[in-house]
Picture 1 (cartoon, rainbow, N blue to C red):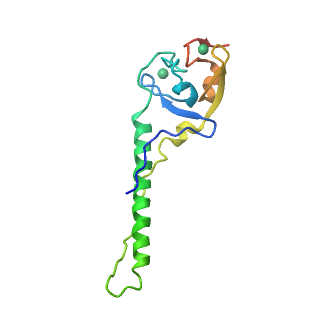
Picture 2 (picture 1 turned 120 degrees about the horizontal axis):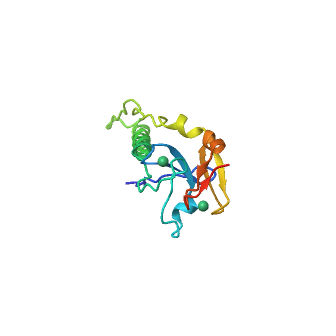
Picture 3 (picture 1 turned 120 degrees about the vertical axis):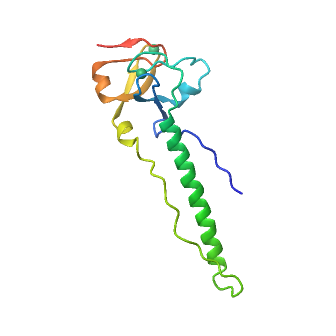
Length: 149
Ligand SMILES: [Zn+2]
Ligand SMILES: [Zn+2]
């Protein structure tokens, strides 16, 4: 029996997707900042408020679906393997049905794709936020300081 864990994966730059529970906007913070014990609070870069809940239902749903897909794929592959092994066996006739349907996990993709890295000098950190908010200004996610021109 194989096990696999559901984890929120960081992107290739080491950022983890979060969603503000207050304004509903998506942003990404460095995994290293989120794991840092000195990071006690996170301020939303858009509304500058300190929300407690940042792991979204959508993000969790997406992880659950990815895990489910992975489980289905593993199950299907091992059944296929069994089918292959019993192919020439005249006593056992084992047939695997259709490939399981994959859950669609790309729902929030378009909303998280359009982000760019914003540097915050106050805390020497970075976040990925909506391109538009880089132009208009945002709040530092670690100290809540306003970074507006
Ligand atoms: Zn917000
Ligand atoms: Zn700061």
